[in-house]
Image (tube, rainbow, N blue to C red; front, side, top):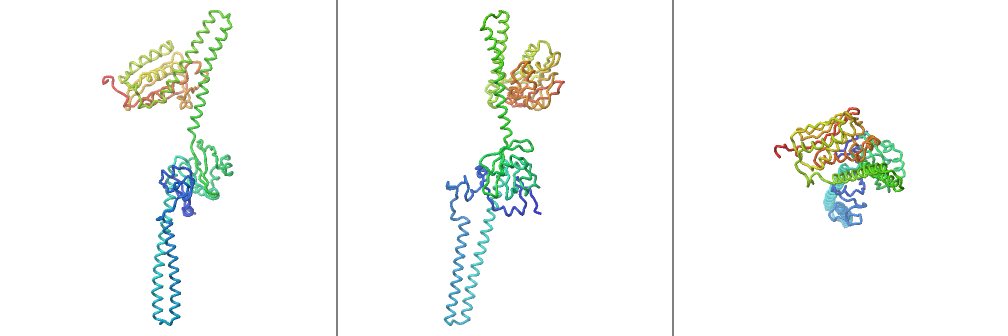
Length: 474
């Protein structure tokens, strides 16, 4: 049985017995990048190909096809010369020339024609070998380019046979090397994709979810009825972002609708009159609280938008920050917010951070206020600023309710709440950790989260050494 091989160009090749048969096949592709990246020659006739604009490459007078045509014309002239020699010998024979003269004339003519024939035959063989090599080289360039594409590519032959697949395509469809040569439908069992391929309506696209959970956009290029190239594009991240965008719009609408409903309701009651003065005062206090909540939400949205659009190298307001002084102010505000219900401590080394003071302060305050909100009365909150071998860390550790591990990757999403009812009752806009994450990024650092349900959480802002200076050297 033919041996299946893993293509050195990054794809999985067809069995060697099939490879020779498919060497001269050219697979058309609408991917212009494939030609540009691999320096590929345009097909003789291809949609979107390079050349004279019509999709057909003009003939090259010095090209291999023209050289072979010239050799064939020369062969025709040689055949004509052989016929002429034969006729000439017959005429000589009929004119009573001696047999010895006829023999030597025949020998010389035949040998000359034989030598010319051999030379022409060898030239044709060499041209055929060169043409075959060019076809093989072009096939290699095609496959090399397809192997490097970020999209998955699978080339199918007759009977839906898998002839070749690049590494990304093997990942998307779950094709192992030993599956090459088998039917594509033996590998892919998704009914929607199978039905779409059977219909051969390739003008559109098909959505397919791989066994690994990837959302794929599938398209097909079919140059003829026997061969096709299946191209897959991973749209998992795009769909995730679209979902986050929809959630964001829905959450903003909800967060704004709630305070507006409260304010409009109280105003409607007061407009009807006959409201006692003490009740009216309570209504006004509640309306003021809701107005402040909306103002806080809008402020956080504007801050987050600015952080998301800012590159970490674009820090016009960056300066050397005395973290000891900044954290003392943050801890004092946290104690005021706690109203004595928690023990809040501060441990800070003498190291300064290069960043934007307002952003760093906002991030630190968000971490401390979250700890206050989610730590039961009598709990402990430890704020630390310490040096490490790779930079410095600002950590806020609490003995609060903790967070389940499945929620941790999504905590920095805008408006994501582990317990929506509890989160809104404790206050906050739902944007705090998103702001902290982007503040870290703008300062060249990262946010790390560790948590154990029922025991507490630790939020750490990790900054690189390039951003840290000793207070004494500032």
